[in-house]
Image (tube, rainbow, N blue to C red):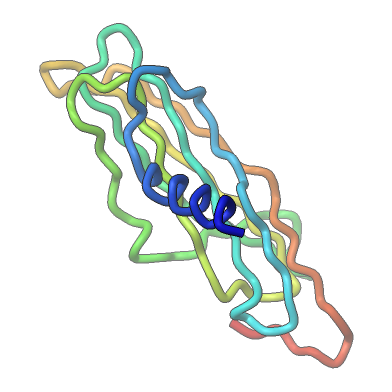
Length: 151
């Protein structure tokens, strides 16, 4: 139990963090997808990671949450989360940027995914590269037909 607590604290201390030494891969990774009867039991956590390129001075990253509810067609629609709006910016000249975001109280039934936008800037503060990655889908299913969707 003590080892698990230490490991959890060690991971929490690293995130959000800027990669040191080893370059992270470019990714938007769904770390957790928790379902439950109440909104407080339903959450997701996503990790964004990006490596520096040769001419990179600073890196920026931004997270956007999307959801699709049954009967709404095939399109995911953006969920406005004010706390997610700012761009996360690296310190100058680091080898990579790693950051995680969590959202609680997900609506059910619905499917969720997160798009992470990445930008690289040079010493002159000019954007030299942009990429976008999308996480796997986090499915929140209705647990029974008498439970209405809540958020």
